[in-house]
Image 1 (cartoon, chains in turn orange, blue):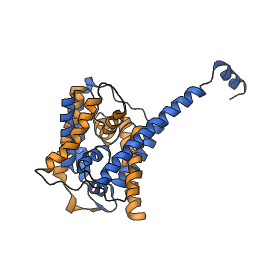
Image 2 (cartoon, one colour):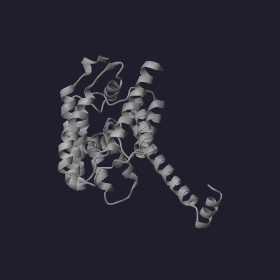
Image 3 (cartoon, rainbow over the protein chains, first blue to last red):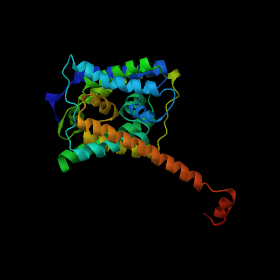
Image 4 (spheres, rainbow over the protein chains, first blue to last red):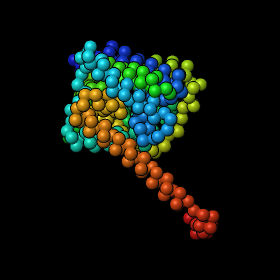
Length: 141
Length: 150
């Protein structure tokens, strides 16, 4: 195992993680909701009384890096892969997260914080398949 | 969930994602590439988020239904498919949405495909529910099936 020291950002990542945890914890404590992004995205197709609130959360998510970007340079958000991967990957992420009822935020952050076995299994499964996918992409294919 | 509070949570969550490095697909793939030049930063994101999460979700536990521990094939299969897409591109749903503001064509296309995948899963699930409804045997059919030893 070789550590990529050049790109390693332990402090910024830890601090960012704490902010992520605070946002998820606040939403749970105040609104009794799980901060699960794939669920909020899916809720886009459900006309209920929380539709506006879900959209507002997504708008905040989009605005945040634009606001920070005005005072602090952020790394590129553009994926370094070809168009077929972008389309196929997007379909898999949309389909898979809804089949599993959660993604990195809902299972990975909220579920693990709540010590849910279901979320631990989901997180183990998507981490493992993502690691295998990158391995195949970079070292086999 | 009030819209203004939801907007604030979205801003805070998006700021955390940007600060942590999760919004960079290259960094995410660098984290997943454990046999290459490995960038362990995102393990620190998980540690930070879950560290504070353990405390806050304990405080908030009365506001939420108890966590589920049910493990089924859909959970595992869906997570495996999600992981393939995540590894392939370096976007999970949150960072994909934060990338929309860049108006980059690949970010926009990924989110469009993610929405299509979401709709597809909803359609498949409702067709399956319908098929189950139709296939539910009536009393007479069930009796016949039992008689056949099925």
